[in-house]
Length: 370
Image (cartoon, rainbow, N blue to C red):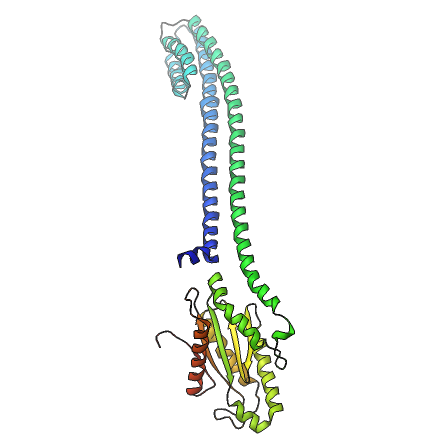
C-alpha cells in the first residue's frame, strides 16, 4: 500500500507543491537576510560617515565663531560655544569607528577636550581647527574606501542571490518536468488503450456503442488504471425495463430502433474523457466512469433515468409506465482495494436485480455493509 501511494500522482503533486513552497520560502528568506545586510551597510555609510562629517563642520564653525568673539570682545562669553562644541564632538566621538579610525580620533579627542576651558588661547583653537580639517579629509578618504568595499560586497551579494535563485528554479523545473512526464505517461496509458481498439471491430454495429469485446478489454484494465491514478471508478449496468414485452408488442424492428435511441442518449450523456458506454448484449448496456465519486454518480444515474423517460418512447405493455424506462445497478471500485473484475461484475448485476425487484425505473449503488 505504501509503495503504491509513493508512486501515485497525488503524492508526487503533493511533493511538488511542498518543493515550490519551500523554494519560495528559502528564496524569500535569503533575499530578506541579504537585503537586511545591505541596509546595515547603507546605514553604516550614512550614519557612520556622512552625519559625523557634518558635525565636524559645525564644530569647526563654532571654533571660528569663538575666535571672532575673543578678538572682538575682551570678555567673550565662551560657555555657549563650549557647550555646543562638546555636544557635537561627543556625538562624533561616540559614533561607530573601526580600530584604525578610533586611534586617530582618540588623539584629537584629547586636544578638543583640553581646549574647552577659559585658559585656552586663540592659537589653541586654531590648532584644533587644523585637526578638525584633517579629520574631515580623513573621513572623506575612509568614506571612499568604505564605498568601494560596499560596492564590491553589493556586487557579490547580487551574484549570490542570482545564482541561488537560478539553482532553486532549476531544481523546481526539473522536478516539475518529472511530475508532468509521469502524469503524461499515465494519461497516455488510457489514450493508447483507447486508440489501440478504436476500430470497427470494437463497435456494436447497430447501436454504435463499444461492443462486448472492447468492454472486456477496458473492464479488465479498470483496476490497474484506477490504482495507478488513485481514481475511484464506477461500473454501471443498465437494462431496459420489460423489453421482451416491448418486442412482442411493437415488433423487433421497433425494438431495434428503441435500442438505438437509448444507446444514443447514453452516449450523448456520457461523452467526456474517460467515460465509456458499451452494449453488453440484448437490451443490456454497461458504462465505466473513471475518476468519479458517489455523489456525482448518483446525479448521473438520476439524470439518465429521467432522460430515458423524456424520450417518450411508447410502451403500453410496461407494468410501471406508459413509456420506455430503465433499471440500473452500479458499483464503485476504490483504488488499491484489489477487488477482482468478476466480483465487481457480479455486485453490479446484483444491484441491477435489486432495482428490478424494488419496482424498476430506478438505480441501486452498492454500499459495503448493506
